Image (cartoon, rainbow, N blue to C red; front, side):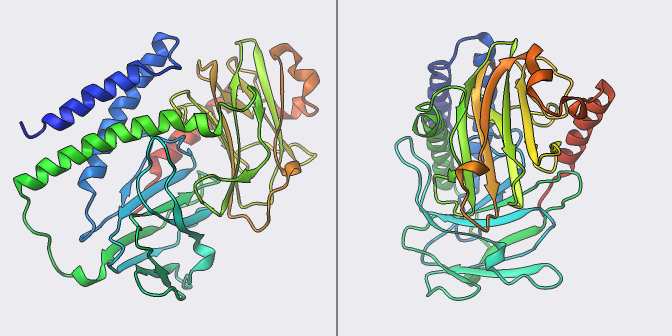
Length: 387
């Protein structure tokens, strides 16, 4: 049966999910099966997008195909490349806070992070007055508007990053292989379908194995309920710094995270589940950017990670997750981040919040104001798209 290798991969993937070492509760397992469903969908999509002669951008991860502690503020797109071919990328720059490009040398594996062969944001390219831009990627020598592809180049990744979800609009982007413009791909064959189902199965297993191992490299070796100083993000995204950690809290405990409002154009925080995925950021406030957060009069942002509602604007909802990951990102940086740019962490009881927060009264919100915040998130995510 042509689809048997993919069916076998799904069965093996279920074993990976059910055998995950962090599972403690029925809810952990349920979320694992949801992760599996999204990963199956993503594997099919990515295998069918493995088209290097007539390439197109696909959404690498999203609300229903999550992986790799996906950033709630980011649209991720990728296209596959041949290192010996030339590609034309054209688009229009939207009003989002950051637009970045990265060439990778291959897929993630359970034992390695792919090398970033080049990474830059739109400050490095010529954007016309009407917002349009044009880039070429190929084996030729690097020059303005032309990015050299190394011999092991495999994938072009584009990230479009929001800070104010309500007002910023994405741009458009497309990719063409220069010597195939105006041509058409050959008809589908049974051999190609066999190959694609096989590739989808391999991608599914690699995706799950890799991102269950990933936190061991960068998170779980850290003391619990702490966060690192800002550091250049592993994987070579040179325009980004990050601060990472993991938490474990009882339901009557809260974590106060205090961080300066940065001069970086983008600053965002999120929680992640033990599956190394973003929590539900559409219907719950499990993430905040500097633009979305309330900034105290002293220039500090004080986030309150809590299971119970503290009645505060910067409540970060745990949504039943007593354990998980903590992540800050700063992007489009014009300078190196310093330790004092990063967060400090304090765990207190819910009852202590009025005494521990210096601007507690100013930070309070009514239930009606909270519902309005959630409604705005739902609308903003629904309206996101990249043409």
